[in-house]
Length: 493
Image: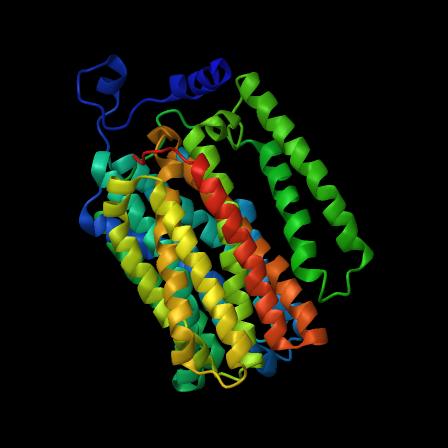
């Protein structure tokens, strides 16, 4: 208890509360209240936040088409997915810190502009390796853009309005992930003006342009009253930790597990330990750690981040494995593979709208119940694939998809709300970046682990059985998630 109070004290003295009543303290008088986030501003923030989330998943149903068009091969195709995910995950916390320093609206605008440009580069890539490079740059742009959305919500809203805004953000995160694959299937099948798979990237350009115009009008500028300098050692060590973990897991199987993949995996825990030591020392000596350990010691932050890991790991692997299995095993076209996820998307959205009322009545049990429903949905899907293969259509998959999506809609938005509930507004960028990094790293780790399990088993026991085993592995992650919900705060702010 004493350690927890000390850790809170390490955070709170640095914070000047944004939006405090004028005249209450000299500090408040020196810093005028932050502008409130209007409804249009919130919609703009959510639109901008949806773009990076959509693009993590939108390529899944387009991979076979990209392979045929660019003669990419499996290793390069995995780099198209992994290059974006690794760059995105590595730079998210840094993006949040930059927003705290230079203004979140400013970084949001720059993020939208660079995301549009890198999306254009992806869409006109002449060969596979150019596409990989453009995807890495697109991931970096996403890392600049996304943390500003969460930080702006945290800094420019308060009370029940903040809780609702965070719930909407969580709903956007889940729906956008599913919409990515649905939209990818539609665009690839439509083959607009002969663009084929290129349309999945080119469509980002006008959407980002609209968001940019709206942001100029409706998004208020906020920043930390006490911006911290960039923690160079922490930034380097965090980036090295994530790269040495995610790169070999995503590329190792396709490359035949060469020596470098095992060396990097062995280095990953050592670098993680070094990062933790540097951050603890930085905070202890009054420095500016990239991820202040005192934030992670907050119960809501720690319990929420720990729960995000198994949830997003399972979700990321689930979306990737389904896209491959439906196209390579059931021989669905890109459009059918995307349409099969519509029930999941609709159910997720419905549950996310019901979430705030459920949270007000049941607190953390909302997450527990949602996790149980998700697990039942996955078991229904596993049974459907096992007994119905290979004569399955979209409607046969709908019940399991809808159950899984409905459960997920009660989990993800509420977790996001819990993680950010106690983070001071002045550290909103750091907190948002930490949560987004955990989410993105776990999604990429899910693609790497469950994807590797599925692809390895499919060559020996067949696509159907490999898919069933992958779904059962995700059920294991759901069981862990359900158990961990009892570590969340009883009431949700």
